[in-house]
Structures are given as structure tokens and as C-alpha cells.
Amino acid sequence: MKYEAVIGLEIHCELKTKTKIFCGCATGFGAEQNTHVCPVCLGLPGVLPTVNKRVVEFGIKAGLATNCTINKYSKFDRKNYYYPDLPKNWQTSQYDLPIAEHGWVDIDVDGEKKRIRLTRIHMEEDAGKLVHSGTTIKDSATSNVDYNRTGVPLLEIVSEPDLRSAEEARAYMEKIKAIMEYIDVSNCRMEEGNLRADINVSLRPAGTEELGTRTEMKNINSFKNLEDAINYEIERQQEVLEDGGHIVQETRTFDPARGITLSMRSKENAHDYRYMPEPDLPPIVTSEETIEKYRSELPELPDARRARLEKEYGLSDYDAGIITSSRAMAEYFDAVVATGADPKLAANWIMGDLAKNLNEDGIDITKSPVSAERLGKMIGLIMKDTISGKIAKKVFKEMWTNEDDPEKIVKDKGLVQITDTGAIEAAVDAAIAANPKAVEEYKGGKKKAIGALVGQVMKATRGKANPQMVNKMLAEKLAD
Ligand code: ADP
Ligand code: ZN
Ligand code: MG
Image 1 (cartoon, protein in one colour):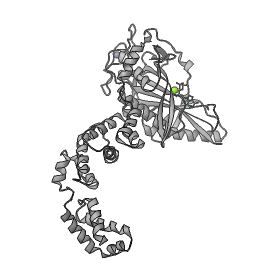
Image 2 (cartoon, protein in one colour):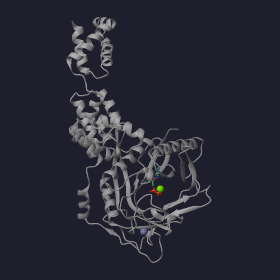
Image 3 (cartoon, helix red, strand yellow):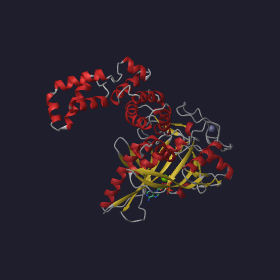
Image 4 (cartoon, protein in one colour):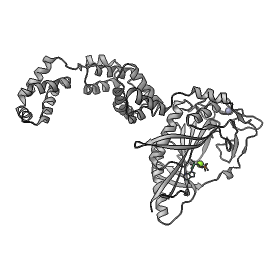
């Protein structure tokens, strides 16, 4: 039988507020253990939480940016469970009246657009962190609890089960990441756990509607793991079903080293958590004016920016999609274009040599050794025919480790393009004299033979002759 995969994501997004959601403790990452704590986030008796207004603002902005309806009356609820990283024994979250509901975002996979619905976005507090003496809890003699993360604000963004493949799930998570970066509510550093996903996967016979039994993989924090976990789980479930078995609803863990998922525990249901309204916090009532104020503060979002780059600069849909996939890259692009650089050349250089070098050295674009301004200047040299596109690759490479202006590098290294007709003519004549065979072939109708001659000239000029001039002059001389 042919099966169809059905996938839904619950994305946890850590908000970049200065202080925690219900107290004044700092939120910073990497501080010494248990230094960002107070009686409120430690859940000591007799204390009362207060809601950080910024968290509500960020929740509403995230909802607006993902086409959600904002609930003007929203409230917090207690989700009760025991674990050492949860000092109150409940997590303050939202249950039936989340801040935002019924949204959507568009993704594209292989050039096809698809709309993914959002069920809801709710606000909640993060739990603390267990720090094991070994690598896992099982091989550790002791485990410490670090409560610095306890009470750090999160948005949980829940999708409908609209995703059908690992690629779609990845595209969806990339889109959510981009939107959260654009609206500036989260750092979205996946390696620091700012953005992590629980993935729900089930199969059903192709062409049917009813949802199959799902499994859930928690805390996936890289795009690679997301794809690997989904692909593995689809295959595993398919084998179980093809063998006549049935899927057990359970929470599984993904082991990135082995690329497999393992059963962890049977999955809990909402009623297991004994959700109850949070009595210590008032409901959140938001006026239409406040919502409109936040809406007016939203920046241009990824889809709109993409459409603008296509319209304003004639970039292809694909290129514009890549350039706007992160706010930092889109801003870098704008800064390059602001120097007067041709937008298409700018896009090519950013997606090509820049992306490749950043990737190889593991550097974020915001810390690129070649600033947008310097790349813009280098593109300017190409546009003025001072250097050819090919020589520019050498210049760019030099710029990676050399802080000089591209103009200076080109002069120092003697890379200025030869546009002097006399110098080119000498090299052209020499190439013609040295390659009678290619000349004969060309004159006999094999036009491609000119390539060998161009190659000779470029070699003789160490790549510095203007290629258009070389081609033109050769064609002229061979026409006689
Ligand atoms: P929880 O996992 O907290 O119990 P939900 O039941 O609301 O919460 O579902 C969470 C996620 O699982 C949502 O993203 C939803 O789209 C997805 N989901 C629900 N049922 C299925 C299913 N049968 N197959 C795949 N995904 C599912
Ligand atoms: Zn605190
Ligand atoms: Mg879940």
C-alpha cells in the first residue's frame, strides 16, 4: 500500500526580552549556573508573578506576522507535571485562550507554493536545565539543576498537520525562523536552543483523510536533525505498518549520532496535565488600538520583501527567496545595493562566493570579513570593467583575509584588466601565430575552435585581458 506522511510541528521560540516572563531576573545565555534566579522563578512560597508586557507584545506581533486572529481576552493556565527542572511543579502556559489562533504562512518547496495553517501561538515559561556529570542521565553519577532558564519567555507556535514531507517541514520551520527574526522577537539561534521543535509524524493510506496514530519527537534543534528524524520516522512507521503491525502513540527521542528515533515513553494527553486557570495572574485584555499599534510597528516581512526584490530589481523568484530567507542576508543585500552595485551581481556574489566562504569558515553573515560596503566596491570595479568577473573571484578571496579596499588590492596585486587595444592585439597575434590548427578549423567553419585561441590569450595575459575585447578582436582578425 502507498502511504502518505502527515506532520505537524510545535515550535518553541525563546523571546529576546531582557527579563524573564514573570519576574525581573535576566534572561542571558551562558551565565554561571543559578545566578539568574529569584524567589518567583524558583517557585518559593508566598510570592506572586507579574506578566512581562514585552512578552505579550511579542506574542501579538508574532500572531499578526503569521496571519493569526489575536484574542483580545487571553489567559494563563497551569500545566501540572513533576520534573526536577520545574520548581513549581507546574508550567505557567496557556490552554484554551491562547494569545493568537488560526493563522497561516506560505512555504515553497521545489518552486511550488503551499499554505500551512497555524493552529495557535501561546505564551509560556521555559523550564530549567539538568546538567549531567556524564553525557546522558543514565551514565551520570550526579545531575545538577540550573534554574537560569526557568521562567525565560517562550512562544509555542503550533501548526496544523498540513506538512507532508521532511522538506516541507524544513521549509516551514525556516519560514517561522525568518519571520521571528524579521519582527525581532527572538535571536533564533538554534544551536543555543532559542528555536526548537517537537515533531509529530503519522502515516495514512494515500488518498484517505482520517489521521493515523502519531509519534512525537521532542526538542529537535537543527534543520538537519529535523529532516533526518522525520525521514527515519516515516520509514520506520511504514515498515511497522507493512508488517501488519500498528503504531503506538508515544514520545520518541532522536539520536543524531545514529540517525534513529527510540521509544522514550507512551505519550501523555492534555487531560493528564490537569490544566487549570492560573489564579495568580489576571487575564490579558488587549484593545483594538494596541493591536493596531503593534501591527503598525511590524517591519516588511519576508514574503513582501521577496516580492519587492523581484519587482524593484528584477531578481528571480528563487534568488529573492534565498536573499530574504534571513533578515541578516536581506539587510546585507540592501547594503551592497546601496553602494550602487548592480542588484543581480550583488545577489550572485552573496549567494555564491560569499555564502560559500561563510559556510566553510562557519561565520555568520553579520560577522563577514568582507563587509557589504567592500563587496559593493568590488562589484563596482567589475561594472567599470576594471576587473573581469573571473579576476574578481581572486580579489574576493584576497579580501577575505586582507582588510584593504578592493581597489587597492587590485592595484597591489597587478590585477587591473587589460583594456589597452595594443597589448591585447599583441597577445591575439601571438596566439594566432602559435595555433595554426585552431585557426584552420575556425576558418573551415568550426566556430568553437575560437575557444582555444581565447584561452591562449587569457593565459598569456594571466587572465587580465578583457574577454569581450579578446573575442571581438579574434573574430575580426580571423574573418579576413
Ligand atoms: P500535544 O502534542 O501537545 O498533545 P496536539 O494534540 O495539539 O498537542 O498536537 C500537536 C501537534 O501534533 C500539532 O502540530 C498537530 O498538527 C500535530 N498532530 C496532531 N495529530 C497528528 C497526527 N495524527 N499526525 C501528525 N501530526 C499530528
Ligand atoms: Zn526570577
Ligand atoms: Mg506535543
